[in-house]
Image (cartoon, rainbow, N blue to C red; front, side, top):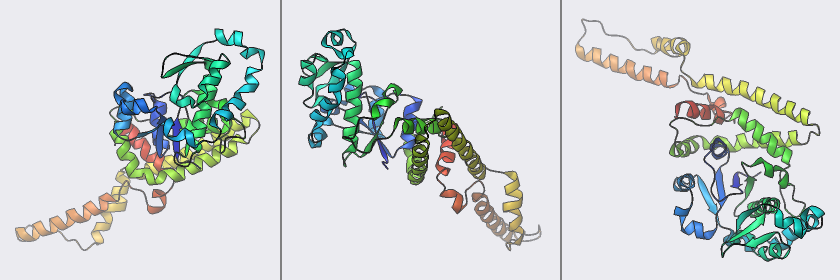
Length: 337
């Protein structure tokens, strides 16, 4: 199971709730950035620059990796050729269909093939305009190929759900998730993982992940395994019911953990202060010296602080539960802590 994610189809990652939730779920999020943008980050949008500055996002530069993907161009041509043989993709119709930009560095030898079949035109040295559906297929293919490299090792993720069906790219690309798996994960995370709002900054997210990130692999393993099981159900209604049942049971556990984290006067009275009576602390009488009074008062303050520190916390078993990460994330989302 992969611990990292590789975003597509755009160079800059959007400033959205999807991105914040994605940052909280994966150990590391990367984006495919041509080398000219890596050298001129001022050409990226402001939010993307912020993500890079706080190191919540890393760049994957195609020119540094695609040469390691054997048969990269041939694999995509093989994938595309059956489409080009249909009437829907005839040269005449391709000329009339809408197009989007793709940077030349991403194409790695595929540009000439797209030009020859009428699926693309050269704009300038850096960009091609590629027929939209073919461009979508290519970006999914590119992301899967890069993510499969050991040095990248990242699952493809996107906020554009029209790409979901494109993950089934055939047996030439290893370790793909079924679209139903992606959908189940998406639904589960939307139900369980809160999105920070208000004054929560990217720096707060960095701090949160450093503090609680040790819980994330176990949480992700639990969600990925359950998503894989749900993806195997053939009936969409059965998948929806399974997602609903999993999120409901998880929410109950998260509520228990959240309650354990919170301050409670009942916990204070019966779980913390009363045991102090048996701790050997005795209050000095008014006739005692001020020094004895002060010493006993300080002892009580120290003991009370130790007792109160235990209130609103998790016990050892609760602390290591995967869903504790989401309980902590709820506090981040609500309070910005």
